[in-house]
Every structure is written in structure tokens, then in C-alpha cells.
Amino acid sequence: MEKKYYIKTFGCQMNVYDSSRIADMLKKEGYAETNKQNDADIVIFNTCHIREKAAEKLFSDLGRAQLIAEERANDGKRTIIGVVGCVVQAEDEQIIKRAPYVNFAVGPQMYYRIPEILHNIEKDSKAESVIDTEFPAVNKFDFLPENKAQGVCSYLAVQEGCNNFCTYCVVPYTRGAEYSRSVEEVIKEAKRLIATGTLEINLLGQNVNSYHGEDESGKERDLAYLLHKMAELDGLQRLRYTTSYPADMTDDLIACHKDIDILMPYLHLPVQSGSDKILKAMNRRHTAGDYLRIVEKLYAANDKLKMSSDFIVGFPGETDEDFQKTLDVVNQVKYIQAFSFKYSRRAGTPAAVMDNQVEEKVKKERLEILQTLLFDYQTKFNQACVGKVMPVLFEQKGRHKGQLIGRTPYMQNLHARTKDDNINKMVDVVVTDATTNSLSGKEI
Ligand code: SAH
Ligand code: SF4
Ligand code: F3S
Image (cartoon, rainbow, N blue to C red):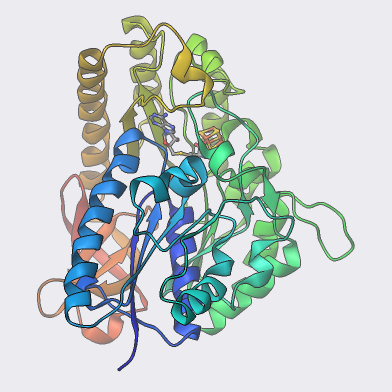
């Protein structure tokens, strides 16, 4: 019988990308995907360490995985349990101490070793758990099998890691120092994705607009250059990039939103807070004013452009006035989408030991106020789309027969009654209805 794998992914798009690369490797090893954990010969958790809740959830999932593995063992089936991703990098040996039945744990830079690790474990049923959290001197991308389209929309990692060290954030520790892939490597991967059915590419990086990959002559090139190169590729219909850091939004990059047709009019640019005092304590290298000036330039470059953002409420030292300034930024930018979080104390980061921590109750109240305001703008924008015609790239079948789900240029989910062969196609749709989270429409 064919061996099967099950992967559960937590965290950001970079983890989603990594999981799809792990899936590529496992398929090459002869495994098939299953979404039923009970059927899986190998179970992998790709983990996130960004906030406390995410990390704790892993251990309850692992406990459940072990129970399933025991049941399968009673039927004579072996299950290999692996943990990858940012929790491994942060916890290191602690993972195996807390969950000794885990067969292997590898950090985000070392997952290219999974096939080799699996061979060893398969050979020796009593093999000891493997832990690997080195930051290698090699480029992991060189060791991965060729990336095929994940569907009609694909992610393509161009940059990884972060040197910004925001005082609340674990990413510089879990993902390591910033690294950019070469222009050639990126274009080659993009061509392969397009050849295997991708129409939309989202260039990915923890800090994607600090991209500085080498071109063929060894010259360092920035993201604006890379976007222009991508726009020359035949067959690519949509281009996006995420996530950007405000201080790295250059004028050249802003101009791309005017000059490149296939660049979608939607940008995720996290501000975190609207208070200069808090931004400084966060070690963000921008003020609220700097951020608003960038947004103004972006809106001037392309009047169709809309923004999304991430916010943290209740960072140490945040007062009601500071929080009000965050609301002020929201009212000026009018985001059409956003992620907002209560500040979560992460061991090893500078903010975790700041002595002016905000009470949980206050964080909760502020989050509710912020989210109400954010949802209000989001709903208003969605409603303003009703009656408009939008190109929708249909990616999957809907719950009901004759229904497809796709995305608008603004990343809104839209479902429409339309024929099945519109799947994987860009179709003009008139929006007929809107809620906070999605649109419905019909083909024109
Ligand atoms: N590189 C991206 C985001 C990385 S993490 C950037 O700089 O914007 C994704 C989001 O998680 C962050 O934007 C931030 O809003 C949130 N986040 C990170 N650390 C956090 C913490 N300790 N508590 C709460 N939210 C956090
Ligand atoms: Fe974390 Fe800041 Fe780097 Fe984003 S820029 S990954 S928030 S340290
Ligand atoms: Fe989480 Fe790691 Fe991404 S901590 S947000 S999975 S980089």
C-alpha cells in the first residue's frame, strides 16, 4: 500500500510555503497526501512561535498524535511523528524532552534533511529522535526539489529571515539573519510555476521589500527591479508581494504600483501602532508620520490601491492616548483588511522583560475596540464593491454544486454560481452581495 503523509501548518505564509516544499519532498519519496491523520504513516507539524497560544497548541496536538500512533501500532502500523518550524528553533531539545515520542524535530532552515532522516528512521525502528536546529552555511533552497505550481496561485519565497529585531518579535531568532535568493533563481522558479499552471505569484519574505538578491553579473538588485523582471514573464497575470517593512518602502517600489499593470492594487504594510513612543519602544524604524507619508505616496501612485496591516495592542507602556493614536491611523488609512493581536510576551525578546506590561483586561478591551473599527472599514469596502465588475481568479469549488470560489484583486474571497470549467481561470464577475468576510457575485 502507498505510504501517506499528513502535514498540519501553523503560522505565516512562509510556513505554508515551507509545508508545500516538504510535501514536494515527500511526494518524491513516494508518499501520498492524506488529510486524515489516522491514515498517515508520517505526521508533521509545521509550527509557529510568534505568540504564546500557537506554541502551546502544539503540545496538545502532539499528545493527540501519539494516541493515534498507539492505536495504529495496535493494528501493526508504524507512525513517524515529526515537528518542524519555528517552535523547534526556539525550544530545541525541550520538544523531545516534553514529547519524547517525537521522531524528529528540525528547524526552518534544516527541513531539506527530512528525506535522509526518514530513511534512517525507516531502517532502524529504535532510532533515536533527531534534532537539528543549526543555521546552515548552505542555502536550503539549493537542496529542495523543483517547485511545482501549488495551484493557480502560488507563493514563491524570495527572501527569508529578518535583521530588524522589533523588540516583541521572535522571528529574527527563529528564522535567522536575512537572506535573499538570486534574481536568476527566483525567475527560474517563477517560470516553472507558470509552466505548471500558475497565473498569480505572490513573492514571499519575512521582510520582502528588503530583498537584495544578486543578478547574473553579481550586482545586488532590489525588490522593485525583481518586480519589473517578473512582470516581463509570459503568461503571468497577477503579481503580489508580502510582507513589507515600512522603512524599506523605497520610491522605486512605490512607483511599481503605478508602472506595473499586473501588480495587484493591494498592499500589506504592517504599522503595529500609531504612537511614536510605542513604535520607538518596539524598535520599529519609522514614526506614524513616516508611515502615513508612505501611504499617501502609494495612494497617489495608484488611486485604486488599498491597504492592509498588522496591529499589536497592549505593548508594554501603551496608554489610552497611545492606543487612540493607533485608532487615528486606522481612520486615516481606512484599511480593507487587517490582523490585530494582543501583545504576547515572548521569552528572550527585549519587550518580555520591560517592566511596564499592560494588564490582560486592558489588552482585551483595546483589541475589541480596534477590531470593531477595523471590521467596520472592511465591511464598508466590501459593500462598496456591490454592483462593480471585478476580475476573479477562480481557485476551487464551493460548498454548493455549480459554485466556485476565487479571489478579487483585493484578495477578497468571492463565491459565484458559474460553470465548473471556469476553475483556474480569470473571469469578470459582477458583485451582487457582501459581508465582512466575503463577496458573492455572478458571471457577466
Ligand atoms: N515581518 C512582518 C510580520 C511578522 S509576524 C512584519 O514585520 O510586519 C506577523 C505579525 O505578528 C506581526 O506583524 C505582529 O503584528 C505580530 N506579532 C509579532 N510578535 C508578536 C507578539 N510578541 N505579540 C503579539 N503579536 C505579535
Ligand atoms: Fe518581526 Fe519586526 Fe522582523 Fe517583522 S520586521 S519579522 S515584526 S522583527
Ligand atoms: Fe510564526 Fe515562524 Fe512565521 S514564528 S509567523 S511561523 S516565521
